[in-house]
Amino acid sequence: MTRARDFSFENNPSADTIYSISNGADVPLGSKGLGLAATRHIPKGTRIISEPILISVPKRMYSTEERLKLIDQQLDAMTDDQRESLRHISVYEWFRLPGIERDNSPRHFLPVKELSTMDVIFGDANRINHDCDSNAQHHWNDDIKRLTVHALRDIQPGEEITTSYGSFLNSQNVRRAMFEAMFSFQCSCRLCSLPDNQMQERDRKVAQFTHAERSLQKGSDKHPAFIKLGLFRVAR
Image 1 (cartoon, rainbow, N blue to C red):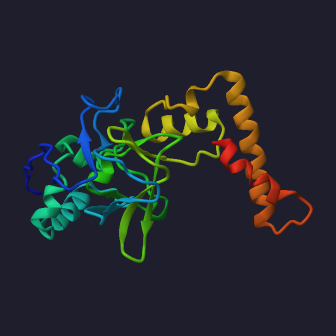
Image 2 (image 1 turned 135 degrees about the vertical axis):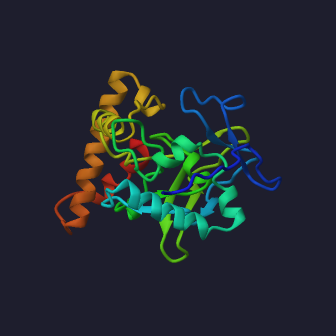
Image 3 (image 1 turned 30 degrees about the horizontal axis):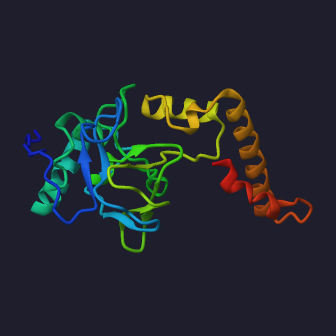
């Protein structure tokens, strides 16, 4: 029988951090729950987070008892600092993150393309909310075995730090269907809230860009792909 564990989840970020975990009192989060907010100006290109995996469970490990046993082993191997980094994850979410309960409830783990065969828990990175027009980007750095989060543009003090859970190079309908199926939420970011005429124009530009990208990958010299790559910025 896997024994229960208790952790403290109070918000107590270190004084030198460039972000804090917000409950929405100081940063508009809507129904997102918790999120990360910049505590000072973060220049474009800044590495905001660099975290190792705290808990990982293979998606194909379907036995709850096996999952709990593996989680327990990883908890035993953690340092006190690593356990402390779990302080912001509620017990309910903590057990859901490794996918122990597989139903239609919302997912709370951060999707990482390079780790698609695993259910993983990080520390503060798990509190980064989605935005199709995000101001940061997360990536698994296999060289250092850490998840890194970098600022895509300047982030102002008090601004929520966001990342994209999927490619913004999808139409609005595709994005909405994906987020509803995978994460049980409807995105209401700036891009998803554009008026219909602007949304249709953006979807058209995205389709042009993805077509150009495919042409480049195929080595086509008959398509003005290099010119259309300029749509990358416009499409956002």
